[in-house]
Amino acid sequence: MESVEQLLERLVTGVIRDRIGADAPAAVRPCGNPKFGDYQVNGILPIAKVEKKNPRALADLVAAAAAQPLAAIAEPPTVAGAGFINVKLKPGFVASRLPQALANPRLGVPAASPARTIVLDFSAPNVAKSMHVGHLRSTIIGDSIARTLRFLGHRVITDNHIGDWGTQFGFLVHGFKQEKLDLASATDPIAEMERVYRKYYGASEADPSIREAAKAELVKLHADDSENLALWKKLRDLSMPAFERVYQRLGARFDHTLGESFYHPRLPGVVAGLKGKGLAEDSEGAVCVFFRDVPALKDKPFLIQKSDGAFLYPTTDLATLQYRVETWQPGEIIYVTDSRQKLHFQQLFETARRWGHADLKLAHVTFGSVLGEDDKPIKTRSGEPIKLGQLLDEAERRAMEIVEAQNAELPAETKREIARVVGLGAVKYADLSQNRINDYVFSWPKMLAMQGNTAPYLQYAYVRIRSIFRKGSMEHGARSMEPGAVVLADPAELDLAKFILRFPEAIELATEDYRPNFICSYLYDLACKFSAFYEQCPVLKAGEPTRASRLMLCQLTAGVLRQGLDLLGIQTIEQM
Ligand code: ARG
Image (tube, rainbow, N blue to C red):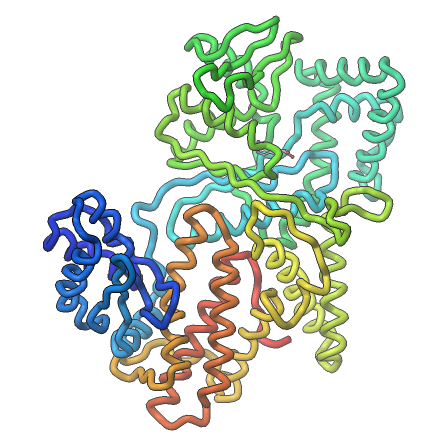
C-alpha cells in the first residue's frame, strides 16, 4: 500500500514532468506548520535553479496544474514563500484511507521494494566476561533495526560476532592452568573467569614473565594446541548461557553466533589474498593496507598481520565480511558499535571497496555512552562497569514498586508480568528515544515516569484504549469498516486520523539513517494526539455512525502503538 506521502510524490512529480518537462522529484514532505497544510512540495526551488526560471512562477504553474489530479485527495494547492506548494488533505480522503490501513497487515506501511538481504552485526560481547551496560546500546539498537527492516519485508540475517578469540584467552588459559579449577561445578563460571582474568592480567603488569606466559598460551591456542583448544572451548561454552539469558530477557534474536574464532582458519588466506592483489604490503615486518590516496586515512594504515605473525581484529573482520558475502550474498551489512570504533570501520569499508565489494552497502551505526548522574560513563560505586543482568533486575524491581503502589490488589503473577514489561520497556525506550550518536544520562525516575516521552506513558496509552474495548464488551474491535462509514467531523479526530496515516513516514525516517528515535517521537506524538481526541470526543457514548468511526480510530491508534513499540522491542500489556 502506497503511503500518503508516496501518493502525493508520485502525482506531483507527474505534473512536474508533464508541465515543466523536468525529470525531477516533487520532494513532498510533511508541512512544518499544520496551519498552512499537511504536506509541502519542496522540489520546485531546485528545479527553478537548474532551469533558470522564477521559482514562484513555476510553483504557481505546478500548483494550478496539480489541482485536478489531486482533486479527490486535497484542497486546491497553494503557493507560499519563495516557491513552496502547500497541500491540505480533504477529510473525505483521510476517512477513505483509514479502513485501508485497518485492513492492511502493515497498518499502511508500504513494503520495501525491492526487498534486500541485509546482514546485521550487533551486540557482539567478548566471551568470558559478563555483558555490561556498554552492550545494552548495541543490543537494543541493533535489535530494533532488525525488527524494523524485517517488518518492511527485507531478509534480515542477524549475526552475533562475539569476541571469542582475543588476547583475554592467553591470560585465561594460563590462569586456569595455574589454578586447576573445576569450572563446570562453579555456581557462577563467568565470575570465576573474570576473577582469574583480573588476577593474572593485573599481575602481568608488574611481572613480565606472566605476560610472556599468557602470550605463549595464546600462540599455542591459535596454533590449534589440543589442550588449549579444549580449555578455550570450555570457557566459551560456559559463557554462552549467561549471554542467552540476557538476550531472552531483551527479546533479541540472533540467527547466527559465529564469532571471531570461526574465521581463524581463513585469516592466512585473507592476508595472502590482499597481498596477491597488491592491496596489502609488508611494512617493517608487519602487513598493512595503506590508503595513501584517501586524505582522512593517509597516515592510518590498516594492520592485518603483526611482525610476529599474529592476526588482528581487522583481519578477522575482513574474513567475516568475505564469508558473509559468499554465504548470504547480502546487499548490505550493518555494524552496530560505539563510536570509538569509527576509524576501524572506515578502514574496513575502504579495504572492502578495493577488494571488489564496491557494490555492497556497508554501514557503521554508532552510538554514544550511557552516563551516570555525574555525567561520566555509568559505573557501580566501586568503579566497575554495571552488569547488564543486574541492571535489568533493578528495572523490574523498580517497576514492581510502582505496580505495588498503584495496583496492589492484582494477582502476584500479573503484577510480576506488568513489572517485567514496564521495567524492560522503560530501559529500552530511554535509550532508543535518544539520538543514538549522543551520550545520555541514565535516570531511573525519568525513564519510569508515567508522564512524558517514556515507555510507561505509551504502554499506558495502549492500556487505556484496550479498556475502552473491554468496557464496550468488544474484545477485538472491528476487523473491517466500510469506507463511507467513517466520519471525521471534530478537529481532534481529523488531526488524529491524519497522524495515524503518517506511521509510514516515521518508519521511513527511522530506517533511512538507522534511527529508532524517529519511531519513538512519532509514537509519543500519536499518544498525545489520542489523548486530545479522547478528551474532546466521547467514544462509547457517541451515537452511530460516529461511535463506530471513533472506535476505529481507537483501534488503529492501539494497533500502531503496539506495532511501533514492537519495532522497538517493547511489549504491551492489557492492564497496568
Ligand atoms: N567484540 C567487539 C567489541 O566488544 C565488537 C564487535 C563488533 N563487530 C565487528 N564485526 N567488529 O568491541
